[in-house]
Amino acid sequence: MGQSDHAAFVALAPALHPRGNARRRLRDSLAERPVNAARSYPEVRADFRRPLGDEGRPASEVIDELIAVADPGIVASAGPRYFGFVVGGALPAATAAEILAAGWDENAWNSVLSPAAAAAEQAAADWLKELLGLPPAVSAGFATGAQSANTIALAAARNHVLGLAGWDVEGDGLAGAPQVRILAGEERHATIDRSLRLLGFGSRSLELVPADSNGAIDLGALRARLADHTGPLIVCLQAGNVNTGAADPLGAACDLVHEHGGWVHVDGAFGLWAAASPSLRDQVSGVERADSWACDGHKWLNLPYDSGFVFSAHPAAHANALAYSASYLVASGEPEPGDYAIESSRRGRGLAVWAGLQELGRTGVRDLVDRCCGLARSFADQLSAAGYEIGNDIVLNQVLVSFGSEDETDRVIEEIQRSGVCWMGGTTWRGRRYLRISVSNHLTTEADVTVSVRAIIAAGNGTGRRHHER
Ligand SMILES: *Cc1c(COP(=O)(O)O)cnc(C)c1O
Image 1 (cartoon, rainbow, N blue to C red):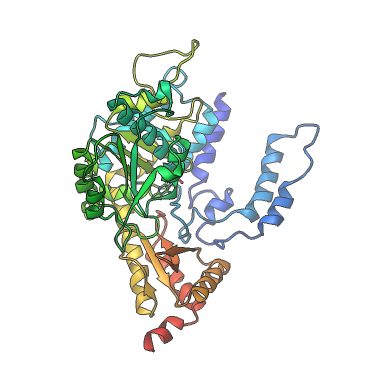
Image 2 (tube, rainbow, N blue to C red):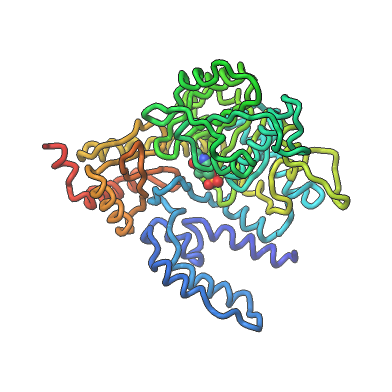
């Protein structure tokens, strides 16, 4: 890349800062523009769909046009009042680093292709382990997200537990292999099921263990299920239920599963970040005793997509589950980024992680997590005071709100989404419909909560108070 290209990317990067150069209007206007898209999906689709020209066009013209057609179809999910799903935002330095990674266009498969990309991953991995309270010796892979991280971790688990039973699953596959028992809490994330399916286990091989009212696995029930168990065993635990934020009793469950020779995988897509906060760390205590972990960068850490992490206390199982080789590949003799992730050619994913973590610092990570939880608590307090029922114990950054009947709750959700003031989704939790609020963006302030609560109460037409008085 020439010097001028490099300069252009560097110049573009700060312009993405929310308070930066007005040229990147979308990023600048995140806090002010309506949260929902200006045009409907069919309209946006029609704008994009056009005949592909025979001749090429100047890059700047194409990009201007791309911005023009995309802008009305962009949801301000990177902004401070998007509370749907669990999406986070994108920190300025991390976003700039991501743009640079795209501009540099290096392949992060190994240190021969890009010393910089590989070094960034190694450095960022050390910081991540420290922040998440994981043992320094665990292997780390930079994945596309927690779905990919769960899949990689469970592939390592499969390698390990079948290896202990004398079976080489990488060589011989699963046909004829000893039976692997796989258990998870009934409120696990759906990506666990998909990972198991992709690994050839089949969704019916998953044994569900009852969970308590906030979605954490019932330890007594798990103990009963494992009572006489011997043989290959994988137990999938969770830190951060997507509806309630609840974490399973991780330390005790790890000890129990290990007594039976099993592998514990922890899906901590966003909830593992509780470990970075002294006031929340108790919720995930003992998590360091697990065998593998999945965590996201693009959710609560506020990194751009696609960014997730997979760690394992068994680096050899991690690498062996993913190993591949070809005659033209150069082996450095050292662990390489490509040994711990599923992609071969890939972007320098560690660069944005490195930049985002430096931008926040240790205190900044802790504050981000604490602040989001405080704001979630504020949502719950204000909506409860307005007479609405809160459907979960507020342990983290997730809040469920009912507006009475199922129909009324769905009507309110639709009205909030139409308002453009804020965006929240709906969910069904324990058989009831709820408005689901997730606070995970570094830009969100108490003022955003106040404005959003007002919009929610307006959409609810004061039914909460009436409900309350009855
Ligand atoms: C979001 C989420 C996932 C999936 O993560 P992606 O990054 O979307 O692949 C898995 N588990 C939990 C608990 C999640 O919240």
